[in-house]
Length: 272
Image 1: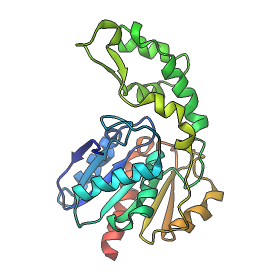
Image 2 (image 1 turned 90 degrees about the vertical axis):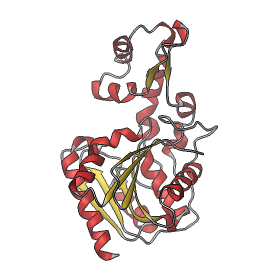
Image 3 (image 1 turned 90 degrees about the horizontal axis):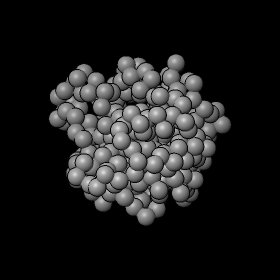
């Protein structure tokens, strides 16, 4: 499977970034640019569109082992013989954790953003959003503003609406009733959101490398009772909670996020 990527920077070390459900690699553009700007010779950031999202291929099912395998294939192409720093947010956090466990030699370090290796409330949070998107009458849409107005009935938060609407595209060459479409695989993600929320058995494996676990102080995706599950899988984990931030830590506090990330990566370099 060939995953779509956006590359920022051309430094000697690679950081691979994986987004959450309904997201795209470009969601990390600001923080990736900030990281590269701090040391352009060191960093190359590769922003990935995960399967069924953005410009990457669709699949027949949602599967973390499958997503991890696709990501591993990409890493082997991007950085043959040289481990990368792997970062994932939300659903992407589960993808990168699974990648570390299934393909341990591909990583120099792991960064997990506001997610734990447990069954999470993603289905409870995102099921209403999928229903709102599926309720949009794409055939009658005349403009993006009209889509925003219709979506506001089920999604009153304008920030979340804009996040979702980044997936709504228009093909002006198509017939008028078929011009608007969801770029992501909305039907599959809606039908299998319980799999997105899940965490498949990992067979008792662990990954011994350095791990940074970032969570938002105002988010409940990472709770105290998740600590044991995380440390069992990743014994060298360091947790950081970012004040005045929710689930989208990198968007709520981008400067602090990049500062914490830069410090962690510097420590990994110093220890290697």
